[in-house]
Length: 336
Ligand code: ATP
Ligand code: MG
Ligand code: FE
Image (tube, rainbow, N blue to C red; front, side, top):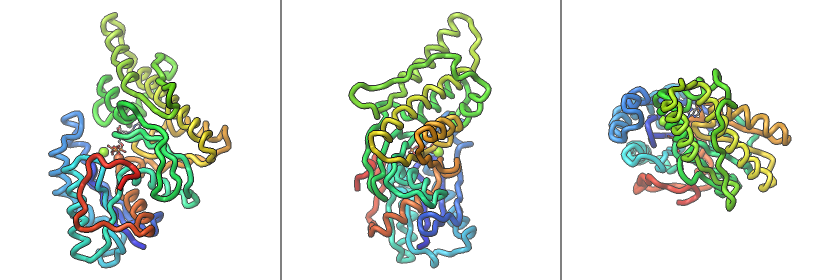
């Protein structure tokens, strides 16, 4: 089964041909990062306009690389939420047009289900059930993947997402957008124990997260230094902040794994490409004799291969969408 995946929920225009949900024949990503960097974040209208300019070429390139035409496909998978509405609409309209013209089945995919499914691509032995920590620009979810397409959310962030915290702290120390990769790099030169930042926990739910207090603590630290005339060691701030984030993510995830009784754990989303986070989970899982799964960095951040993979499992389960498929900007995981 060959599926064309289409992704346009934020600032990446992406298309990919995926065979049987696991084999990626092409993975084309046209990022708009350079455009949005000027504004320090994603500007929704600019994102929509760029998607509409680029999407046909991106799809053509994905087909060419796979050595295929639209006639060789079995279905179209497209992200229909959550995300920026104007950005999502471009991919959804495109997918519907192809579906109509070529009489191909259409499968709407949840973007976060896509991020989770990225783990299937390079791990041919990974099958549900497993526990997955989703850490992206807009989401921080601890999920039990019971089966393909079946998700049980154990906990989530009560304020900022992990990626959002990376981006805001990066901006505060003058690293610019997107902050995650820049903090990751700078932190390698810093001391993670230099500054003690908070590790928020909740009495009533060991699975929930909070990152806005941590972000404020970093801002307070920076202000304090400025008032006292102390020069800030940005690498130490980056390393200490990153360590605080990793500590709570690992701690909460390991509680979830233990309680679930499962011995497979995966991470997903843009922040899952963070080198310190991967190392921390590598260690935590090895100590507990658990399997640890993670996508390559290129499949962690937004891409369409993950959408093609998720669409495959929906497709073989019989899911089909009609030409009335619409973008749902605040779509919840597990709802349809
Ligand atoms: P969502 O998937 O929740 O809708 P999104 O699609 O914008 O949001 P992703 O593309 O999954 O998010 O991930 C982007 C986020 O990942 C950004 O916040 C970025 O800073 C962060 N990120 C990317 N690389 C790294 C890294 N190496 N370390 C930490 N964070 C990173
Ligand atoms: Mg992006
Ligand atoms: Fe994403």
